[in-house]
Structures are given as structure tokens and as C-alpha cells.
Image 1 (spheres, rainbow over the protein chains, first blue to last red):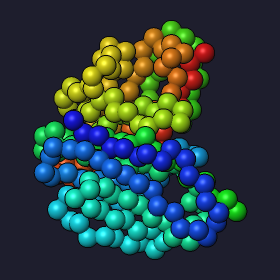
Image 2: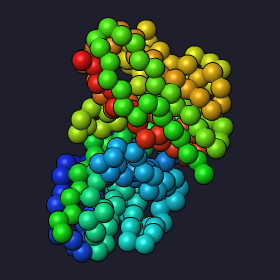
Image 3: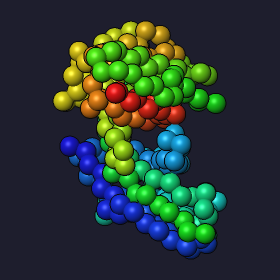
Image 4: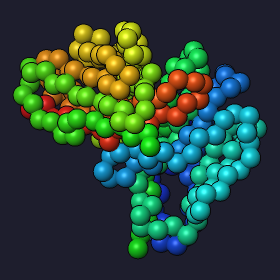
Length: 117
Length: 116
């Protein structure tokens, strides 16, 4: 069974601080995808990144960076120089290859990030 | 590109009535659509997966007769909550994707259902 654990339920940091959101996953699949989504108060899920299991390169996009480590089954997300607009709930997710073309997403429980001005 | 809409965004209905929620892919053909449910301050739980032209596949514990899903075209899927009760009050989110392994899921803005 697929499982995604986000141990941090809530985090608060002062604006401009860096913050890392942890994500640990479990899967028996050798091929899988990992995702991060942002859910602001409006409720709409905003896609941030997708990473496949064969690509362990870290990725940086502006103030966002992701650290994928298969050895520890982790896919952590770091926001540098945080801003108030970063306040949201962040979900890590794992796709399961049930059969070709029908991958299901398993979501973690989310981390509520509050940036204090 | 890759925009998914949901209608309505909010709905309040009386207990015992049925409510239909629409999910549309506006600028791409969605071979597969997913329906999720999210309780306040909780994670998204997959309810069902629907492929265009075929019956939906429901997750364990989701009542098929209560949550009717129809995916009649490549751009539209509907979720009907039949005989709604207050415990069905939740945030319902759909997502849509094209074919191909790992194809991105694009999420709709969600529908907040309140059953009184």
C-alpha cells in the first residue's frame, strides 16, 4: 500500500526565514511519481512539482527547492526567504501505477505553513 | 493551459435532496477524471476514478449508489450526491488528466457542499 507521511502538521516562521517541509513516502512500486501541491485558503490546489522515481536530481525553482532522496524515501520541500503569500497548506503526494494511465494519487495529511509578517 | 473548472463552487442543500457537481476540462481532453473529498483541515481522500465512456472505479468504503459518477465526454464528469445528509457536507475536488503514464493531474477549484 502507498503511504505518504507529513509529520509536521503546522509550522510558523517569521517572514524571510527559510523553512523545510518534510515528506516521507512508502511504496512497493519501482516506478512512481512524487508531487507537491499548495492549497491556499481559497481551496484550490496549486501544482508545484512532479518528480519521477528515476530522477533524483534536486530541483530549484526560484525560492522553492526540492530534495529527493530514495535512500531515505524522502522528498522534502524548502522555501527560502519566505513570504506571507507562502502561507498555505502544502501537500506531498505519491502516484500509484494501478495500471497504465490510471495512476492514483495518495496524499499526505498536509502541513499548514504560516508566515508571520 | 490545463484548466479545470467546477460548478457550482458552493452549494447548500436540504437533507434528502440530491446535488450534482460538474467538473470540466476547459482546454484539454481528459481521459481520466478523479473525485476527491476533503474534510476541514484534513487531507484529500480519493473517492473514485472515472474514465470516459466507462463505469467509475470507487475506492473502498465509498458508496456507489450514493455518489453517482458519470464521465460522459472527454471534457465533463459529474458527481451526484444522492439523498444528501449533513455528514456529506465536505469540500469536493475533481482532477483531470490526459492519457499516458505520469500524465499530470490538473485540479479544479473545488465545490463546498453544505447539507442542512
